[in-house]
Length: 448
Image (cartoon, rainbow, N blue to C red; front, side, top):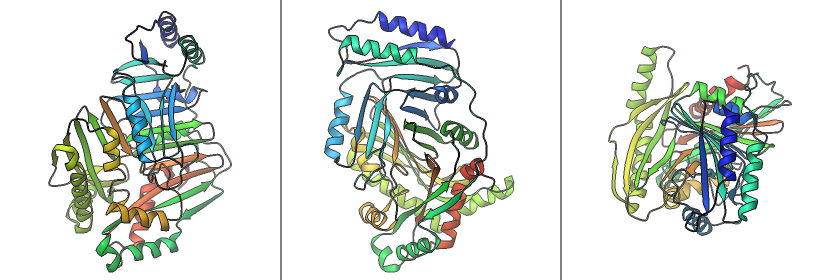
């Protein structure tokens, strides 16, 4: 059980010696009996706390504490970020060591205080599940600390671990108020501007979004909320970052930015949306109508073409599905095309993030003019909403696009939803789409 695993890992740390040719970052691990991962994370009192579950991998991770972190606030540029990223990759050849974190939607705009333009951590302790196998891991960073100090830090972190306890039961929160930014009137104004023939001639797509703020006067456990959300949308990426007790960013999102294994990259075009049917027949008819709809098909095709275009200079080969399929979630369904690339030697994750993020599914096309419009007109700071969240190391990485997401702060829950505005988009229909996208999380939080 967990106490035995902690003792075993403690003994490993105490007997560990650094060899002359050792990597400066080291990971030690032991097998552990099955533990409910998210409940274990919620029971810990150490920060930061990170949760990650891939969309189509049998893997789940809870991580706490930090033995190395890199944080970039408002005064950073991509050259510094790239340099720091490359530096981390050279510190270890162990493909199990991972940095978890995220990059904001817009690195040119101001950022959320604790999250920054980019924030990645190498956790102190991790609980990882792969299928039915569980491991407890500890990371040691000898690049900045003396050997004895780092060993002591790791031992203290293990001694502070708490046993998992049941998550707090879900409860509906009483809403003290709700506000939308942009509000409905402003939304209509923005959609009309974007769909104006003169504007659309230069910028065929802008993804407009909305911040919905729910005022509450009770505490909400972000991990309980994420666990409920996960239950509704199991075929999504699920992750959360809580750098301090005051705010947590959680997401249950369908969209992959990319997955890299050595030089092989998998990505996708996910754009075009409709609701789910009340029965199988209606669901099938709605899916077919989505496939046949010219506006949605055009939107998906734009995204596919853009991704292929930006990957081409970085790749020896890029292949994309010609026809879309339908990707189903609990309340909505999307058009989806898979894309695969083989990278040229030496191309790294940071170049991929620069090329792919933000995707046309969350920003628009062309990227620069759509981003400028969002920056100047949307009326709030997106922060990590629609940002890229995931993990990286030397050999592999995976990043999701944080589209269905929530920022939980004292007294407030911030919810986000967006819609791709193209020729033929109507403000009322797009507003309804935003409501549909929030329906799952709202039904967990409140009495609808």
